Image (spheres, rainbow over the protein chains, first blue to last red):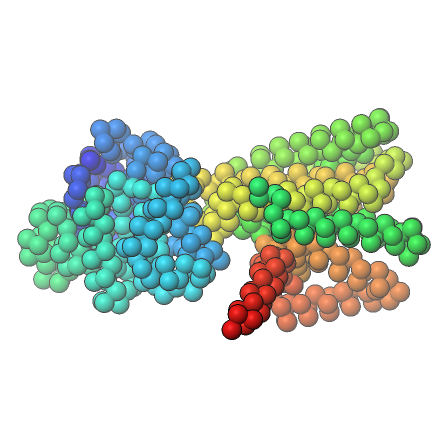
Amino acid sequence: MLKVRDLTVYYGVIEAIKGVSFEVNEGEIVTLIGANGAGKTTILKTISGLVRPSQGEIIYQEQPIQRATPRTIVQSGISHVPEGRHVFSGMTVMENLEMGAFLRKDKEAIKEDIKKVFDHFPILEERKNQDSATLSGGEQQMLAMGRALISKPKLLLLDEPSMGLAPLFIQEIFQIIKKINEEGTTILLIEQNASVALEIATKGYVLETGKIVESGVGKELLESEAVQKAYLGG
Amino acid sequence: MRILNKTNGIWMILIVLSFGLLQGAILLGLIDAFYEITLVTILINMILAIGLNVIIGFSGQFSLGHAGFMAIGAYATGILTKQFPNYGGMAAGIVVGGIIAGIVALIVGIPTLRLKGDYLAIATLGVAEIIRIIILNMGDLTNGAAGLSGIPYLSTWYIGFFLAVVVLIFAANYKYSSVGRATISVREDEIAAESLGIHTTRYKTIAFVMGAVTAAIAGSIHATYFSVISPDQFNFMKSIDILIIVVFGGIGSLTGSVIAATVLGVLNVFLQPFGSFRMILYAIALISIMIFKPSGLMGTKELNISSFIRKKDKSENKKREEKVR
Ligand SMILES: Nc1ncnc2c1ncn2[C@@H]1O[C@H](COP(=O)(O)OP(=O)(O)O)[C@@H](O)[C@H]1O
Ligand SMILES: [Mg+2]
């Protein structure tokens, strides 16, 4: 579904991504793990068209998209939940979800999809008329994910959904991610929290200062030397 | 249809009512020639503040050069109406001034609004000054520092009122349109907006251009009401005056801008007898607002008529329920 080949990204003179290649097949949860500053966010932003690569290819459903605009990328079915809790404060939960449908015109179907989001995140329905700024961190993360789902993605890009959340919330969010995946959305998940990510992932890649240093099947990767070294300092 | 709902109906009634009140007061001699000048000044400031609020309040960008765009409208209309001293000339002036202001805003906006941060503030500060200096040096066309005089008196308070209403309705519709929502989402969270495929530069630029065009309209009324214009009327202090109205009324609140333009305009009249002491009282008024209501009179909220209706409906429902019991 998504093939990234030899991706190189510069910020000015700094080479943030140094020839990264990986693949996401339809129906999978693929995770990219790595420490702070490894280049995870940069890779996601490059896929969704917010950052331009200097080299390499991003092939999505057999089409190169590395020159496409963020808008056409969203329309082609890739939806990006950015790192941190980016909700539109001053707008209600409902209005935030409606913003997720900004590029869609089919009003009736949007209502249906908002219902589906409420099925995944019942707390959002309870809070639907509340200013999104008053939500807790975990709820804001859920809202950002729900909003991304409204654009009906085939591929959902998640940037560190566990960041700054209490362990219980992390478990909950990851169960929901798994469920969203089981219902047919392919997921590219970026995490620092290797153990929770690899638990639900089909496949994982380890990123270190802009390079992929290891890859493998979910749980096996957790045992690997690279992950042990990166996370446990040994 | 949305345009003909209850809320909009009440707004229309309010607008007609305030028109009627003003007209009545003028006929009865309660508003004489001097106060009519105040009235038109308030209406011009209202248009300026609404436009600046579209830029600052809706798109979250800071513009410090609003008076520059006003100058473009004033000079375009002044020059054209001196050639064609009729309403055709004035309409042409409004259109030409609006187009030039819009183009200048595009030229300034597209490169600076691509950047994140307050670059627009710096750029507009410079642009307003450049506009003023260009006007100063355009020879006979603008008559340099002395400015233009003898511009035909074409504007009346009717025209001011009409254009203020048009600009207000336009801005209100914009706020609640999908373009407006996108603009506000960019203000609230640029990263989130980008991730939804919203072209952030585009919406910031649209708001900036709209603000510039409305400022030019205000300038056109100014020129044809006061008949005399000069570059120093459109200096940095004028931009700050407009900014004060926006902040006073509440950044992001259109009704706040309307109320603030009126309150500050009336306040100015009452403070007239105090001479230069006036500025001190004016400052005290502003400082008290900052202390007691730092987000401005209205905050980001609008004067919300439909919530009054809803409250009334609710209390009626309650009464009905009680009756049933
Ligand atoms: N906008 C930017 N300008 C310059 N350097 C950046 C920018 N964004 C990220 N970087 C640098 O690129 C590298 C990778 O950053 P990032 O992709 O955010 O990593 P991660 O998400 O894995 O923490 C870091 O060294 C970071 O400092
Ligand atoms: Mg990151």
